[in-house]
Structures are given as structure tokens and as C-alpha cells.
Image (cartoon, rainbow, N blue to C red; front, side, top):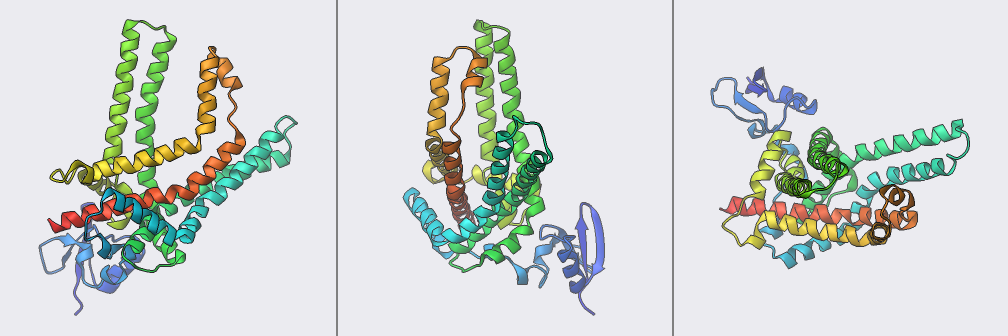
Length: 355
């Protein structure tokens, strides 16, 4: 008689079920590697990923160890390997980028056409163009979650010295869509809440008039906002890697991300995952700042020459051409950010395993 297994999901037990039934449940998404499992004739619980023949035969390529990461990467080596992987898989990364960039560009073109015709009376063509722009924006947002998972899978495959097609990457990435979507929305809402609330309070204080106390409160709120967003950045630093490369659930991804970001306290500060993540993010923000410098400089020039806030809003018109070019370059270079974080993640996990 084939071996039977019991699966426990959120406190409820299912089974007994043989291996073929478990494979059907896995295909339906009812069994995940992190679910608890035990033999029907046993009492000890373990993870479903340990069931022989259930997950081992269909591991995605990202589960394979990366041999070139067995030695620690210096900061220079990290940057060099990031660019080396990006150049090696440029067209594959570009293919993933076009998933998001294509619909987004169509949405922007449709929005520009709507704005150009907004002076006239609304007609069916304008409504159709507006609806098309909204649909393309939503489509781009949906594909963004596939893009995030695809960057992790493709980079881990390159780091392991494997060859993998874009279709194989997409096939694996789609499986992680619900988890990535939930975590992305949760992380975004956390940043929005802890940024919007202090900003609203600051504007409320300023509108009521400035005094010594109000200035102190504004500075206090700014400090609190910076501190909380910094803590969020640390806690959320590696959630994408754990959600995809480790197959961890939503809560588990956030917990392990925080633990990894705070790990390696015995290493020099510049080798710790936290500071490497901060360094990578700082380089990316510097690149974004440089690409958007024309509009940023125009904004500050408007602030210095305009005292009325309403006039400032009315007169400030960012350059559509420079904004479009900056957006294109950001989209094309954005995989570098994902590649670097995957390399830091793989090296940090390798070091933990060696301890």
C-alpha cells in the first residue's frame, strides 16, 4: 500500500492522501512547501517540502546553490557581478521589463492624447482613450508582480551558472503572483501610511501658523517619519527574495527578511546585509535623482522664485520629454537593483549556512 500522508493547513488536517493525490493538491495550490505534514502512521510533524517526490522533482532553478558565491563578495565584486549578470542576460531582463514598460507606455500615450483633447467636449473617442489608459495601467500593475518574481528567478539562475529561457522564467514567476501581489500591496500601504500621516499633520500645523512650539512639532514629526520609514526599509529589505527564492509565505517572508537584514553582526559593518542593502538603494536613488535632475532643478528654482504656494503649483510644469526619457532609463536599468539584492541575499544565505 502506498505511503499515506496527513497535511495540516491553518490548524485543519487533511488526508490521509497518497503521493499522487498530494501532487494534485499541489497543482491546485492547496499544498505548499511550508505546510505541515506527517505520515498517516506517524506523530511527528514536518514540512511538506520534505515529502519524498512531492516538491524535490520540480524545484525551480532558483533553489540550486550558486557556486560562485561560495566566496565572499567585496563591495567592488558585488557591483562587478551585478553588471556582469545584467549584461549577460540583458535581452532577457529587457523582456521582463517590457512586461511592465509596454502597457505603461501605452497608458501614458493614451493619457497624453486625452489631455490634448480635453479642451473640447467629451466624445466617445475621449472616453474610450481614457478607459484604455486605465486598463493599460491596471495591466501594467498586474504584470509588475510577475516582473518582480521573474527578476529573482532569472538572477538566481544566472548566479548558479544555469541557462534558462524567458518562457521558463515567466512560467515559474506566475506561480508566485498572489503572494507577491499581497506583500507588495502591504509594503506599499505601510510606507504610504507612515509617510502620509506625518505629512498631513505637518501641513496642518503649518497652516495654523508657525511658532516655536509648532516648529518643534514639525521637526519632531519629520524625525519620526524618517525613523519609521527607515525601520520599514530594514524590515522589508529581503521580502521579495524570501517570497520567491525560498518559497516562504507572506508572514514568514517578512519575518525572515527582518532577521536577515539584522544578521551578521559578527562581520565588519560594510559586509552586513543591512549596510549592503542601504548602499545598493543609495546608488539607485542617486541614479534616479540624476535622471530626473532637469525637473528637480526646475522645481527648486520655482520654489526660490515663487512665494505663493498656489502660484507655485500653477506655474510648475515638469518637462514631458525629460520625464519620459528618465522613465525609460529607470525602467531599463531597474533590473540592476533587483540583481544586486539577489546577490546580497544569496551570499548572506550562503554565509548563514556555513556557520
